[in-house]
Length: 251
Ligand SMILES: Nc1ncnc2c1ncn2[C@@H]1O[C@H](COP(=O)(O)OP(=O)(O)OP(=O)(O)O)[C@@H](O)[C@H]1O
Ligand SMILES: [Mg+2]
Image 1 (cartoon, rainbow, N blue to C red):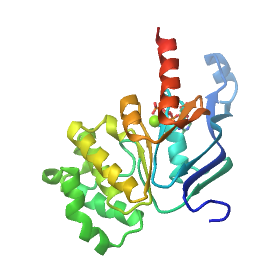
Image 2 (image 1 turned 90 degrees about the horizontal axis):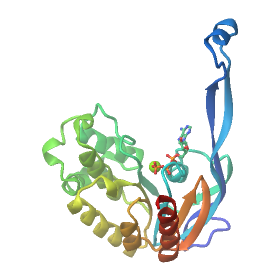
Image 3 (image 1 turned 180 degrees about the horizontal axis):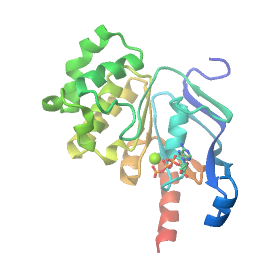
Image 4 (image 1 turned 45 degrees about the vertical axis):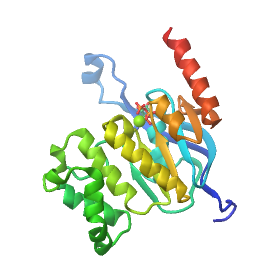
């Protein structure tokens, strides 16, 4: 890709993303009745001027408080959102497991969702069929594979989502907080799979609130604060700085 080194998997270049927030301007019942409803919209810049690069074969962590725009940034990388400013370059095939509730159709069974997701991620029916058993096996939800996923527990849901995402041959895997929902055995299984991935030169971008997990898994980390990049760099330094800020605020 032009202007991007071959060994760079992801380039986030001065990215900003805004949402429109709608407000009802009438403050009293009388003004609401007397005047027509006035709905006004303000721009809310959720992500502001964020830049970093992720080398191929590394696990990159995003940390920050609730509402700091980690998920919004991940969705921008997954092309669910288009940045309002700046650019994102993803050097390869992207597969993502975002928050619980996204990605699957609730009324469809686990089996149907595997095929649906596989095709969304660019696999043929034949390719999905060939990987089907492996996906179900990794997920551990075989008993429930023909039940609609709306009846799955949140852990089961995440297990199936991760199983699909890791078996669709991505160059770049994007995962949002999955490890906070899975049980110990699944976290361990995922951790091993992620190690295998990076060993193969694939790249992982993950969000987690578990700092021990981030320390263990990530080569580099970006700390988001109010949608801005507060720090980016080697995991130990950035996690220590974030940890200190939490400590300072909660004491
Ligand atoms: N579709 C949307 N429309 C309007 N505002 C949104 C939308 N999605 C997110 N936001 C706002 O953007 C901000 C960042 O939300 P986001 O979900 O990215 O945070 P987060 O860092 O992932 O938080 P958490 O740790 O709780 O998962 C919040 O203020 C949220 O209300
Ligand atoms: Mg989030």
